[in-house]
Image (tube, rainbow, N blue to C red; front, side, top):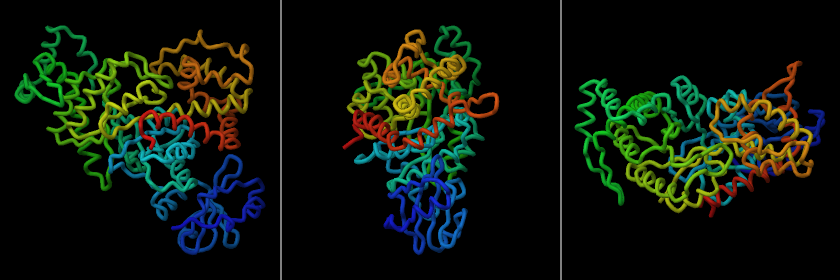
Length: 497
């Protein structure tokens, strides 16, 4: 495989065949034996172009005229691309590089992410979506990987990327994601974590603990009760009360984690990054509880790549960290030491825009760690709308206000709608300032599914088609906005050179 002279692709001939203007992505032009392939864009649609002859030409499906084939950038052709250009296939982060989850809800952000990553050693998860995000956007995980793979080909990005089936809770979703090409499974065990235990008084706690079988109680007590565990400068003692709380809170989750690991992860024919999410809880993860979980994972021989505790403070969507930075620093240091001691990396969820804690992460965590972002990429698309199509932005903002009560059912946010400036008070040239206001950011952040998918009485998209049309016309500006915004994340996290 080698990059080829882009002049071999006759864009004028392609425009005549398609009947509309064509943009050639020059970094994609690649020679595969007797065949040259490239990616083009014509309005909102992308196509693979194959010119010449040979196996790849024959296997791609599309419209043929003599020795030139125009092929839709669809799932079937993506699989052909994966076969002949392995760098377009997602892989696991086996080298444990510092990593960033870059959830692209629109299928249009990866090129900008690639620009942001230039000069770094970060391992990116270009494909990262949860079931909730897939439902809100009407996409499948195949669609997510398709978009990432074509963007990698488009930009000539050959250094590897991952695909994260994010916050999966059900075995059928895990199995489906793996079949579709996920190289990372983020297991959300929140439905097996008993959040009611932490609030019990001593008598109620003991009563609940006695309901466990005697054999189970005896096992945990012999293993851990009153044991002293030294990690770094800290010593942890699992006293009886704390042990009862941890067993009752987490034992079902640990059973679930073990079952998933044994059924899907360690039996896989290819490497899989396995992340444990324990951050979807009502209270922060006590470091003692983290130690208990780590000990249990070790005893059960469950090897995890990353673990996401719930840290002190609030990690709300689309805005900076809320909380005491000194307390966060102390909390982080303990969790980081525990993770390092037991041989996995820390993962920080809802990491978008947490600029105040990024330098703390870089300074405190000795070695590699993982940060998840997603919604901030969507918000940069909204920023693009505010800059280039004020009328569309106003329609989106108004619809977001209507849909906010519905969206809030799915997210924990503290948005104050009464503190958002009224649209009629803001000039078109100042609309971008909404993206600098925390309340407006959260309003626009959590309503994305309704803005993308809601339809009018005729069945046409209220806003989604107009948005994607603008993204196609202004893709270079969108890339620039993303490169700047994600670049700020990378720099403050210490991921940039």
